[in-house]
Image (cartoon, rainbow, N blue to C red; front, side):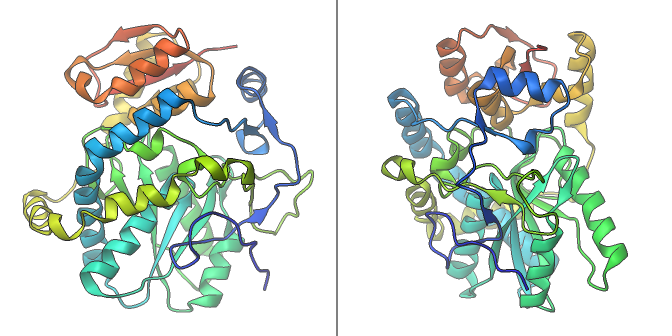
Length: 363
């Protein structure tokens, strides 16, 4: 059985990344070059954005939003964790985060379950790539290690629901070929796309880990699948950014939120009682289709809805404009800051299920 490479600034008891370390390969391209390649047909998973030292303004913003939202996130983590237990049980439960946005959330859920039920649930981070599916080598590794695993997939938040759909297809594909059956239910912290049945909240607010890239995700890059230098049936790849160790806040982020777990217990219980049976309406996708029409956008992949995705558009794509839902103005300070830094026009657009939406420039 193939063994993954040890990589990340997280403790191995928090998470095991099932990835191949490809730190020796130079794959980083600036945003303009990457954008041209992506829009002319190169798959986004074959290259990486440049990882910068976050600016001082950005780090200040991260700490400020972490102060403001740590308790709110702790409550959402508790709600998700309790729903996972109700759905899967604790016996044979294995948490599997989708790298990389899902990883900090998976660690928080694992820590919550330890605090609440005194169980140490195994937690892995694996790669899923839009249009290419899930890393089946990683899934086989999990089943070889935990033959009776009840796998619960975890991500940070939903946008249009592309990863929800990708996961559904990937699980069907895997289950058709193997005796082990995968449950495609995705658990997310925030579900503004209305496409996950296990979620902490459907409010589209800033999860501070969306502010930063590798420096809040264990110093691990986005996952890569590039067969020019990777073996076909090996784990998907990623890089470890050792040079960013001095600005790494991955563990600080986890510790700050986990510190609230005990005191939010009552709130978690109350919210769980209020949460009705969750219907998946794909309301987010309907908003996106309306935006695509209103702005004559040819490719739906150029519409990135929600606070998390809009943040990423401003950080590592070439933005055309940002749509802002005025009712959510209080949650959008960092979006306004970033847009101002990059001279990106902002337009009010109230008619969407999201707080904001990033539109990528057609190049």
